[in-house]
Length: 176
Image 1: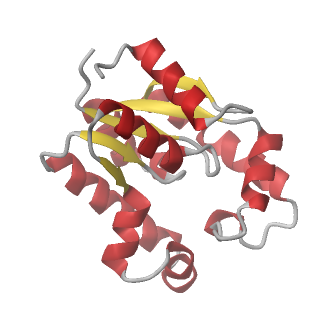
Image 2 (image 1 turned 45 degrees about the vertical axis):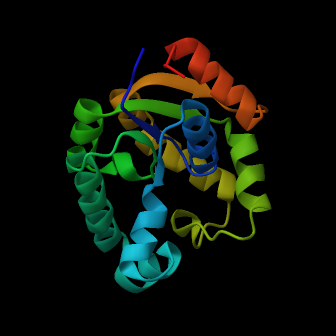
């Protein structure tokens, strides 16, 4: 199967950015990280933008960038932010224009990944006394949205990036 536009969606810490790089390399197509694009455009890190401007302003920028990439001639793998599905407009665009793959990781491993990655501040976890409880809350809020936009769900718990990419390629038969 030839798929020109693949978007990875899922909770923070599921490996979207890492898997996007590995998958694009295997397929020989470009890779874009929406969060990296946004940071370049706004001139600061997303956590600082969240703090200074708020979530609504960030979601506006995020939506604008998703629309821009979708309107462009980009063909490849797109890594999205965990909250991309919060807006109906984004869900509609992802469903209509992208082959979305939902990366899922069990909550216990998500907590371990998020806490281990001290290089990255997670704005949606700011102020959370209980990270696991907050991740569960976000999951409950978003899981139906992820399911709605996705054509495929891949479990990433306790798998290497190479194993995850192999599973995606096997299940989808994407042209390599």
